[in-house]
Length: 205
Image (cartoon, rainbow, N blue to C red; front, top):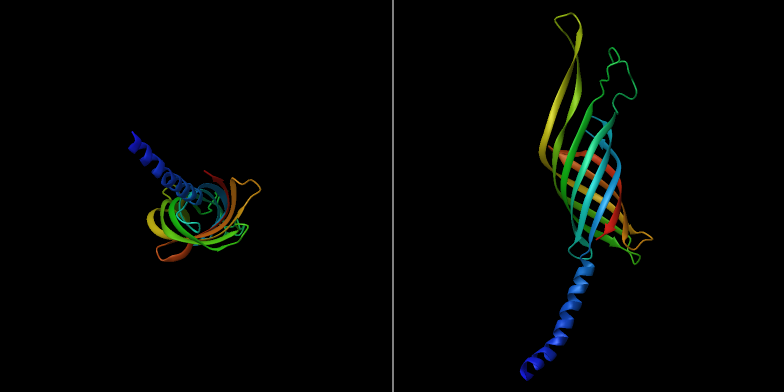
């Protein structure tokens, strides 16, 4: 019994050190959930769009983080038409359209970190796109003597990569983070295929 007490007494400082070190690791390796939205540009067809983003940030070190994300992109305007309706026939909308889901894993390093915890980070990682686009290809004369539209539809299920630059700062609420991010998603050797700007509100978990 006495031997057991001695072991416990001698072990107590090491137990305190163990829990202290782990508490510091947990404090540094915070999880942050971010939800964001903003404007986008699809560079191949020239489409203006919007993006919605969900992201989880896991800090491996105080500056290095792993950031899996899910982003939805949808076009809202065909930039090439510039409001010109001359290509319409019988009031038909012939604007090109695109939408996609992107699953990314962004490995980010904060190259700048101030005393007030303002961070400027750069990130890179793989990106998988699942979506498609439709482009009006003109009209053709049908058997009844009228005109029918021809649409060129492409579906995407492809792997590429994403790069990003972020500006991140602490809000008034200590459990919130604010992030302004610019990301460039590239596929089929085209850079950037998608340019996305968004504001992300972070919640510390």
